[in-house]
Image (cartoon, rainbow, N blue to C red):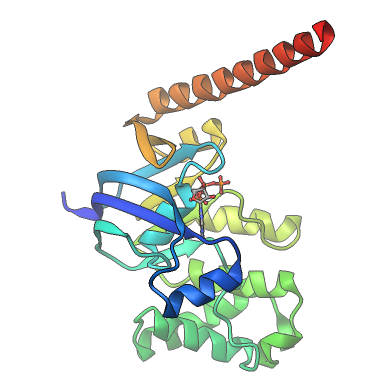
Length: 260
Ligand SMILES: Nc1ncnc2c1ncn2[C@@H]1O[C@H](COP(=O)(O)OP(=O)(O)OP(=O)(O)O)[C@@H](O)[C@H]1O
């Protein structure tokens, strides 16, 4: 088997400035220092071609940062990220549209950016248009679309470009209920075709339906990486412990106030 995704000692640090003014000044003045936040802390892993992997973690664990490195929206501060195959990310679906271009033009624009050749784009175009259900709006500028219409077009493009690596964040919500059902069916269809699949979710049951491996992240590190059932148990226990810890802290604070 060969790797679809490979991370070697990857670190991602974000710079935290006091405000936007300081951030801007720092471009020209190297003496302006910022605090740093290590969002990914020396992470190494491989995902083999065709593997379906769930990524669990509480808010702020580093999941989005990791996905953004796979989609090359964010670059590592240290280490190496290697991606082998066409990535389709069902994440920020409306980013990158040109508002002055029509929906149809944006399909070509985005597909070209993804490195798809003209012949393939022409072949995919009718399927994308049919999926997006935009009617005559497909030939209107995207600035005339509602946010739901933009998300539908974004999903239709990203899901119909025959990805080799599919990345999905469960928090994704596209259009109305009927369209969401259609999106889920499409995701199921792509996963069943044997693509490499990386799925960010808080729902261990949904993850078990799709994935055979699970990774748990905490504070930018992998704290568990194994088969989906044991990873799901590990994550559930971690969440339970956190809830319990918070409950105890609340009770202690209450007691403190009582005895003051
Ligand atoms: N652009 C940024 N600048 C500064 N800090 C950032 C930036 N993006 C993320 N962070 C910080 O990096 C850490 C990891 O964030 P990330 O969004 O990757 O977590 P996450 O696991 O996806 O969380 P969630 O489940 O809430 O989406 C957090 O502490 C977050 O505040």
